[in-house]
Length: 441
Ligand code: GDP
Ligand code: MG
Image 1 (spheres, helix red, strand yellow):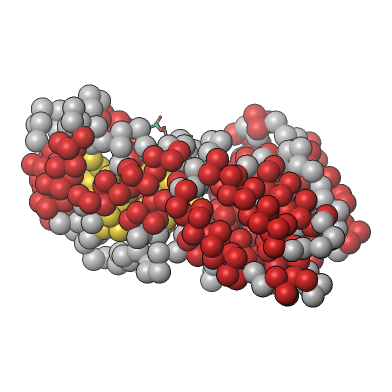
Image 2 (image 1 turned 135 degrees about the vertical axis):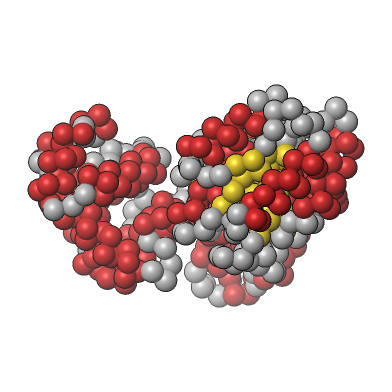
């Protein structure tokens, strides 16, 4: 997808005269590309119509930055399509909320339930998990395992076959234990589809969830709209989570899910592990959808704010995809030195979601400083190695002692490193655009 959109824009920007014909050709090509990325036909057509309304050919002809205008229009339009116009229901810490997860089997519900619980637990909530999937053999074991690993209370049964009964019992129990986030995991498959939706309706009626979250696998393709709509018709879906965004799918189905459920995407799943879970951020998502990579905005910013003489080196390192602790250290230095433009790094999905949450810059800075103190106690070998096995327990202990920090904190810092290294590795082989060519879609 990315390729053909870039090509379309490239062709257009190479054309000397931007007239309606060229704009149409460009839009047609993008239409094809978005369809390939699983964006629903109707949505693509709407976008096309809107773009034509927004982009004023006279403006384009008058020699304004043509490419920028069209790019921006497409980008904005897609962002708008991901905004249902109302926020999802916001839960309140300390006040009991019941959240029900729905979605087809294999979409990632059980995994995502735990991620969602774990995410909130880290923020001081008291979550609990209820397994109302009595259909799939082993469903309860899976939830139990996940929950135990995350130290989250859970409820379920090996023998009871009525999902409604278990759901109600679980919710009741955790209400008594004053949990403030009671999560109900449900089944995703039935012998007959109608039976599944009827079951969802019954579980929902019996547990009266404050929020129903529709979980969707990013790779389901054009089926997204119908699937989301089917669930919306049986239960009051109020939010969407898109999973497996670490795979190849660009996630165009998310646009369909938003359109079908009139609900926002709130998180994305980026791996099988508990912490591979990110707050949904529209702009990087749209960048990815357009094949800009999550990096294009980031690269733009690099050119804006990283001193010219340091740019080639940084970009070189990015393209090698080899993220060492030393590079992390240098990037931390940049963040601290540049103060507010630490926002550069907040363009990176990994940095934004965890390391530098919006509105908490002070805390983030303190954390970065703490990490750097620990890294000051590392040897050159440790800083320059990209072998994750090098950092064994005795080295971690030495670093903790050397920096006057807890072992736990050193481990945290290394976790952060691993997370960033994973993101960084995706940039491997990145073509480094020349300055002035940064905004290429
Ligand atoms: P459920 O049937 O809807 O409950 O789906 P599960 O939670 O059992 O997930 C199905 C499979 O998808 C499991 O192997 C999960 O590990 C995997 N999975 C779930 N979310 C993600 C994700 O974000 N990324 C990847 N790579 N795998 C995921
Ligand atoms: Mg499940």
